[in-house]
Amino acid sequence: MKLPPKPTAALLEHQEFFKGTPWRPLEKLAALAGYAHFVDGQVIFCESATADRFHLILSGRVALQTTAPDQRPVTVQILGPGEALGWSWMFPPYQWSFTARALEPVETIAFDAPKLRLASEEDPALGHAVMKRVLRVMLNRLQATRRRLAALEH
Image (cartoon, rainbow, N blue to C red; front, side, top):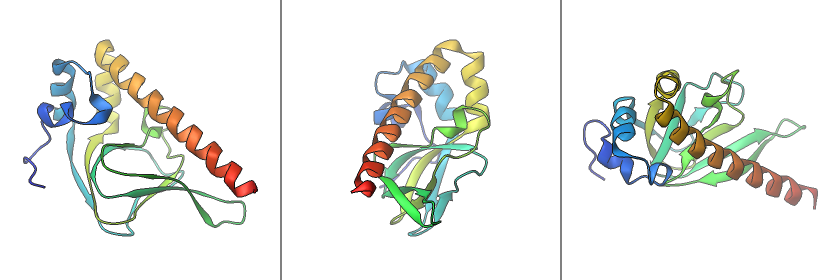
């Protein structure tokens, strides 16, 4: 996939996470974004570490994992192209709730989380649009975690 040097509003407009977002906020969001690349097996972020990025997956698959009581990693959900990776950046204490690991080469649009929070506070329309979408991601993660825990009990 040939990507422009920097993510554009037009590219963001085609991401599922931003569907229906007005153009003006997309231009602001594009200014806060860059690309990130991860190799197979690479940890993208670790549970409890500082949540300083927000990713939209362009290609590849990512395992969201948590630590079981016996200290083994448990995969809660596998994410792929078109999905958002991370929501912990939005809420204090800004620490990841899961570990994310690339299951194959992964390419993302990565947003600077502190700048995205500031832009969301300065522009209430932007903040509202982002918050609605982050809450949808949180609900999906909660449901996936619940399903995974139920499967572990059986």
